[in-house]
Amino acid sequence: MTHTTPHSTTRRNVLRGTVATAALAATAAVPAGAAHAAPTGSGTGPAIGILLYDGFSLLDPTGPAEVLSRLPDATVTMIAERRGPVRTDTADVALVAERSLDEVDRLDVLLVPGAGNRGTVAAMNNQALLSWIRRIHRHTRWTTSVCTGSIVLAAAGLLDGRQATTYWASAEYLESTFDVTYLPQRYVRSGKLITAAGVSAGIDMALYLASLMAGDDTAKAIQLAVEYDPQPPFDSGNATEADARLKERALQLLAASQV
Amino acid sequence: MTHTTPHSTTRRNVLRGTVATAALAATAAVPAGAAHAAPTGSGTGPAIGILLYDGFSLLDPTGPAEVLSRLPDATVTMIAERRGPVRTDTADVALVAERSLDEVDRLDVLLVPGAGNRGTVAAMNNQALLSWIRRIHRHTRWTTSVCTGSIVLAAAGLLDGRQATTYWASAEYLESTFDVTYLPQRYVRSGKLITAAGVSAGIDMALYLASLMAGDDTAKAIQLAVEYDPQPPFDSGNATEADARLKERALQLLAASQV
Image (cartoon, rainbow over all chains, first blue to last red; front, side):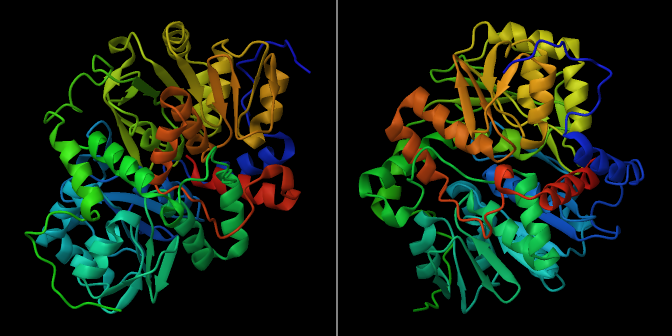
């Protein structure tokens, strides 16, 4: 059935009926500009900080940020060595770091995203970055990573003797370079450390983290809020089921897209 | 089994063995800075443009950008009314628009993300934005949307008489306001228009689009490259299976997080 009513510019609510009305009433109770203020957490909710560094993979920070920003009263802050744009592995896209490392002393949640080879190696060798990670980690409730972000955590010494996961193509490197046992899981919790597998796994990890921080009901509601009912057109995302040819093609596409 | 070898700063490859070597050899063949040049598509691959506007939802553009940036020789360009940072619905995070509307005449793929109520309504009423969308759409190979981005496409008149999808809570609004038939699917193709459901559905849609543009083998390899083997801790992302209480909680969390 189709309708031909032209849209009215005075109709202001694109969400549904009474449910949306209740939701919008809730919005009105939030002081204007509240989400601008004090992004590193002098508010009432959890202060979530995401560490950006040159060459990060775009979905690693943004998938979890989308999920975790829906936790009640949460603030999500992008952090880097310097404030300003930080470019992804393809260099096509930039996210803005709102705070520099020396402006952030405490976080409830630290998330370290992954990167291509160049970005990961540079982060592993960046002593200022690693030192900041260690310092922040002392007081976090949760220290987390996505993709090769676990290699950066390992380089900071945070994964010694622990179980963890990482990007499928980096598992061998993680195990052979550090005192870490790799588990081929979507996410792995070890104490207050939670590592996620590659790129898109950050979304699954963030929902798990949301459940730990705010309970299952809230995490389930966030999953519905971001309509996360995954139905990819193919079933080729699991490396343990992929043949060598597909793995090689995947890594070639990645490498060719990265600068 | 654990290892205690300290990591060497001279070991430069965090990806695996011979496969990674082949991949890195492929990288070396790409001229340095190639991904910086001509972001709106004077290169050899598809020019993918993503329209940002104030109040967009972070995962809507970034999920598809992660996927589509792995298409051979693709460029992904964030575009907005003006160059510079564009803030999300929570106002916590900003993506950089690399080009303004008047700097972009042609795109192979246009993607319009969704937003919260405020951002969607503002975009629907922004005649400069709608006029640009119509102009670019004339020559695209594919015109796409995520979440309430389909409402913006509808406001531009592109969905008249078509089938489409949108964010679950906006389906009623889409059907009652425009001459559009809503389908509760992850993504819907109608001619060269492809609309995706809410937020995370953009990832599924982008893999489908990748298969249309570069074939199933490449799309499958991209899925592996981003390790998209979704395993959310809950099964609550489908609105047709959610009860009224969960829907209300989801919309309350969304509204409370948005500015």
